[in-house]
Structures are given as structure tokens and as C-alpha cells.
Length: 460
Image 1 (tube, rainbow, N blue to C red):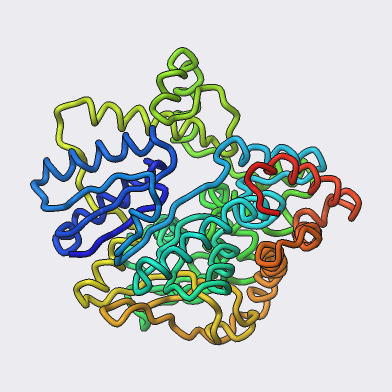
Image 2 (cartoon, rainbow, N blue to C red; image 1 turned 120 degrees about the vertical axis):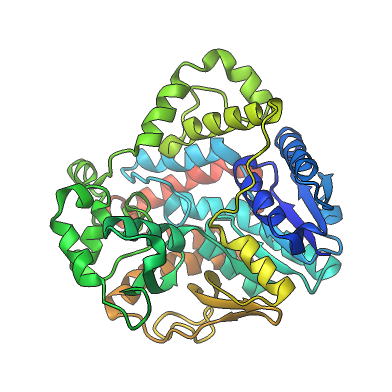
């Protein structure tokens, strides 16, 4: 009967998905789920959803709801973190301030000025969670979803002794996209993926099994198919020049390199068109100003709030759907998603072997990336715990691209652990996109503005 603590449960979009996934496994549902957040409105909505789901499915699960992190963690077997310190307003400032200096980010959650400052706000809190675990549940497994993943996981591993793994959607999400580009289904693919989070590489891509047809020749043909190429321009260009398909979206990947966002012409050429769901939800959100107060009361953003990447529209639509489900009489959805988390918990609890891609320290796993940095590699899970797989050398070009990002991450981690502002300037100065736009003096001015914007959430 495991105790599973979800820290950041007020982020109902993700918390709902994880909670539902966990409850679909009988071996996990026979325990306690502790929902914790400092935001009472989001936590209230999520607790109502979880309790109704348990009642409808007639499950034995105990739902504990608390704003006390120690109470949630105490005695836990698994701790899941999905937090964002500073929230939407500061994420917006992370994008707006660098844009004034010509650094046009898209998501700003991984490296770059936005990724570094998101880490300065978020990583210390995750370290606090890990240190709580060392006192209150030292044998528990920490599963982190919070970004920037590479910086967070590197810092946690460097400063605590907890068992931890970072989880993302990139590998399985990209595999599904590749299957669609190739006219196949996800189950048709056999793949081996490794690198760093948001920049791992499909080193092998085959049909069926490791003995099956190499699918890379067919994928390379898709570069010449305008309909497919236009859906993933950046990633197809990276594959064209460097040989391998990368795991994070074109929108993300464009800001991790110096090649796609340096000028307005390049941004227009390589910016992927918004997907249909984003256009629809943006349109739906446009006229919702009158309902802004109600949305805010429920934890949703007020309509009209500027958000990077259509985040406002997506959240408004999601909160509306969730409220309709809670207010209605139809049973709540009860299908398991493709998220790794619940499968890992089930594997550890029941000794059912499971393989996934996760983020762990580089203890000789990828030999041409720096020791100790965070790497994303295949991992085996069962009742003995998590066993990361040895990958060896990445192709030289792939490792070289990774190292440009690892340079920024290393300095950001040192800045956080040593509480050294000078290292923050250095990290941002080495960011591949920032180097295309800013002098060193510009970097300092921009970084000073970012320090001022996040001051209330920084520890140095």
C-alpha cells in the first residue's frame, strides 16, 4: 500500500493526468495519494476531482490534501514534483526582457536567459524537497517533472543523496510523431534514444525490432515532402545537417542553437505554424474576459493575459473542461496516458520490468559528455529500483551540440549551489542563442533586469 506524494498538485492540468494514471493500477490504488500545493484554489479543484474519481471507480485509495509539504512527504514511498516557482507572470518576463535585447526565445524553460532564471527560482525549492525526503522518507524515489530538467536534476544529484529521476514527454511524444510522419503506428517502432533532456537523439530507428528495417532512409526522404517538412522544419534541418532526429519540438529546439532565431527572416522561415488546437483555443479564449474573475477564482488565468506559446488559451480551455466534468453527471475519464510515471511506480511495486527514458547523473553512461552532468538515457525499472543503461559515445556532432547546452547548465548549477551571481552572468553569456545577439555588456544589463524581475523568489 504505497504512499505517493504529489508536490505541485495545484497545477491541475498535469496533476489530473498523473493522478488518473496512478489510480488505473490496482496495485497503486490500494494506498494513499497525498496532494500538496501552496495554491489553495488549484489544490481544491484537484482534490475534488481525485475524490470523485475514487468514489466513481469504488477504489480503496485514501486522498490526503494538504498545503504542508512535510505532511505530504512524511513516510512516502514515491514523491512526484511538478512545480513552477514564480508562475506565469515571471515566465512571461523571462521572455519579454530578453526580447528587448534581441534574444527571441520561444518557451524559455530549458537554457537561455529564461531557463537560467527559471532554475534560479525553482531548483532551490526542489533541493529543499529532496532534503525533506532525506529526513522523512530516505528510501523514497523522487520523480521530477519540473523544468529546467537538466539543471534541476544535476543540482539535486550534486547536493543530496535521494534516489531521483527526471521525467519528460519528449521521447515517447517524438516517437509518436515520427510514426505519423512515416505512415506507421507507434507500436511499429523500435528505437534507442540518448542525449540530454530536450535534446536527446534517436540513435536507432527501426521497424518492429532491433533487427528490423532501418527507418532513417525513409525519414530522410520526408525532408523533401513539403507537407511533412513544414510540420517540423527545425528538427528536419538539424537531421539534414547532423544526421539524427532530436527529441524536442521544433519550437523548443530552435532556441537551443544559434541557427534559427538570429534574425526576423530566420524566425519567420523556421517558426512552425501553430497547431490547430492552439488556433482554436486561442480563438475561444479571446472573448472570455467577462469570465476572467471566475476563472481566476478557480485557479485559471484571466483571459487576455499574455502568455508564451498559447499557454493562456490552453489553460482556460482545460479549466473550463474540468469544471464542466466536476459539475456534470457523466463519469470522469479513466484512461491511462503515455506518461512514464505510473508505469515506473507499478514496475517498482510489482516487479514488472519496464523500460523508459529518464534523466540521471552521467556516471559513465554517455562517455563523450561531461561526468556528472544530467543525461537522458534508457532506464530499466523493477523492484530493485532504476538501472540506467550504458550508451557509450554519441555521434560526435550530437555530443558537440549537447555540450553547448551543458556549458550553460554547468554554470547555472554552480551559481545555485555556490550562490554566486557572477556565474549567472557567465551562464547566460554562453547561451548559444544569446551569443548571436548580445555583447557581454548587453548580457549584464539584461541579466540585471531579470534579477530585478525575479527578486522576490531568489535566494542570492
